[in-house]
Image (cartoon, rainbow, N blue to C red):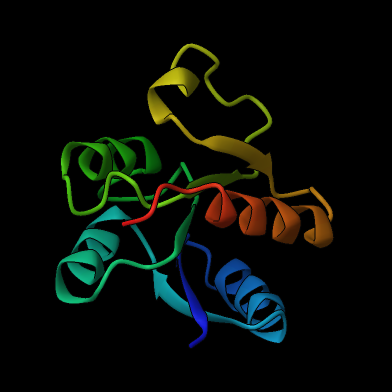
Amino acid sequence: MRRRVLLVDDDLDVREAYADLLEFRGWEVAHARDGVEALEWLAAHPPPDAILLDLKMPRLDGYQLRAAQLADPRWRDIPTLVFTGDVDVEGSRLPTLGARVINKTTDFEELATALEEAVRSARPR
């Protein structure tokens, strides 16, 4: 069975590019363009093995989605990587995320390795 990641980003080009790379690495990729779609997807499917989450999105941003995820026992233990292009991520809000933050300029291999490590070190669900 392939591992599944939920890729949450409002930029279609980013979602498609990273989905292609992740699928090549053996991941099944589900897409959501904002936090509202991500919560709808989570409610309708078995939990993914990981979430790759952008911060700045319309309707429900990454901070709000992560707060909702952490508040729900069905989803709180899903390994989550915050994946952002914002070089000025608000430092004071980062601890509330409880997730590793990776800049979108990071080499894809580094991102893939971080994703693999997050899944390996996750608590069994």
